[in-house]
Length: 171
Image 1 (cartoon, rainbow, N blue to C red):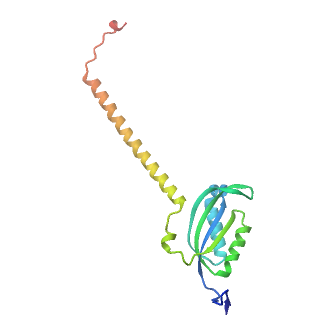
Image 2: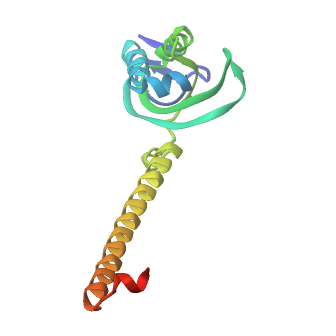
Image 3: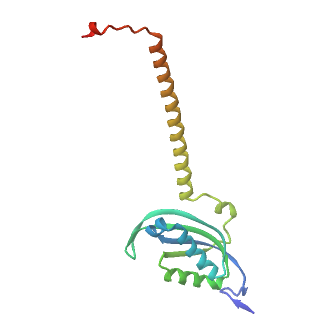
């Protein structure tokens, strides 16, 4: 049995469309239990019969206005395939959820896979933090090697010198 959409285009029941979902989670909950937030989103998606293509942390930001008494939020970007009739159910489940504050779901049929592969700000920040930590570790290791070389040279210079001091002359 087919349903009618605006414009007279028939849409068969059970047709999967690609969607982009931006979920807003409580920042404190995301920090303390990231796996719990991911599990909540996956549970909502599986309940709707959606196939999750990707689910990534987008960014952790200050909100323009308070939402349910919260000033910060953690955004999760998701691409998924779902039956169009089940999208309202996803939105309703997010409203009921304690961990998720908001969701915005858009049809993403026109979005190419290359766009989906672009790293999120959270991915870029994690990469930059790793590179910075690696550089610091390398600089620290080089500094220790230089310090060891200077110490070795100093000890060698002391061993080469004949230090003959008479204690009576010092006093």
